[in-house]
Amino acid sequence: MEIIPLIPERDVAIQRARVAQNRDIRTQAKACLLLGRYYKEQGELDKAEGLYRRALAKARQWQDREMEADACSGLGLMYQVKGRMDEAVDYLNKAFEINSERRDAERLAVNYSNRGFVAHLQGKIAEARDLHTRAQQLHEASGNRAYWAEECGNLGLLALQQNKLEEAEAYFQRGLNVCEELDDLPGISGHYQGLGMVYLGQQRLAEAEDILKKGIEIEERLQRDTVAHHYGVLGGVYSQTGRFDEAEEMYRRTLAIQRKLGHKQFEARALGGLGQVLLEKGDTREAAELFQQSRVLFDAIGDDKGGAVQAAILGNAYVKVENFHEAEEAYRQAVQRFEKVSDLKAVADVRVSLGGVYASNQAPYDALLQWRQALELYRELQIDDKVEFVEELLRTSGRM
Image (cartoon, rainbow, N blue to C red; front, side, top):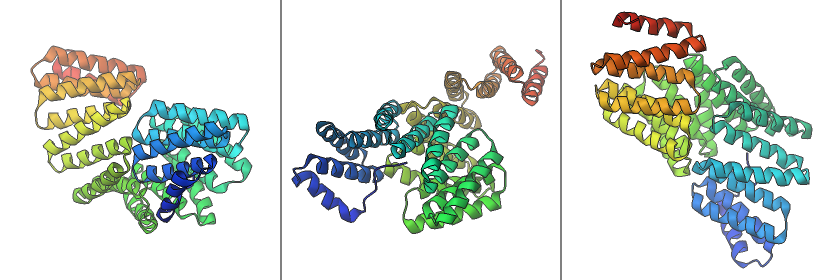
């Protein structure tokens, strides 16, 4: 959520002239902010960073606290796109501190939302939910219904992350109702995407395809790069219905846009999605290369959960071509990463797969060790069907 407005391309030359020729420091700083936002949206992140830093320096020189907060917000969101999450959090917190001192409710609400978005990307779901809820409360108090509806979308995405599909659907539907009343086309499209994700999770695939295509029509008409998210979800729908060529096209479109924008985390996700489709199509070699690229990107931005998921998927790809040595290494890395983020169910799942690799490599004792560790975790988590599955594995091995 941006506090700095996005200028049209025709105004770029005007703002450049203000930076270069105007002697008023505040005018220069404001122009730097506007250009920083413009170049961030174009994917020219280094140029955006330089402009935001110039704006910040000028705001501090002039002791303009509002502009200083806006520059910090701009830098925070730019670093989030780059995947440099620690720096993103640092600058967003600085903006929050300034706006708290100034008691600027409008900017505080935006700060809460932005901090919630970064927390969500970091996998801090409870923290993100609290921050987005606070943002929504402030928007409600100020009567900003469009931003209130946007927070419905953010809270819906968090519910989806927790597999609370009915709760997510309720959030997206409430947000959509408000956006339709306001004739807010970008908002309508965003909630269409959210509902498409819900329907995909509920296996309501025809409804998912229909509503996502409606969102894509809006996004393409408005010429917005956010259409990439719709393409990605539609790719998932096509995968579920066995339309792998169409799924591949959607994921390739998503990947191209995310690379243009420089959004590392979304690029990594798109690589993983495309890899899954290619794996289904039998192109195991390219799929493995994409999973590896995705894992490297997740590691580069410090996303342990994302890296763990891709390592596990990479292991699956190697198993499919009976490359058990590489599969073992990938699964071991997945276990380490899932342990780091305390995802015990995922740790157990990967240990089951790793045990299968050892069994295929004629290393039965190593296999038994992995399966017994998985069984212990499943019992601790009280996942009965998984307990029964691993117990059967052990019985079959004759080592229960």
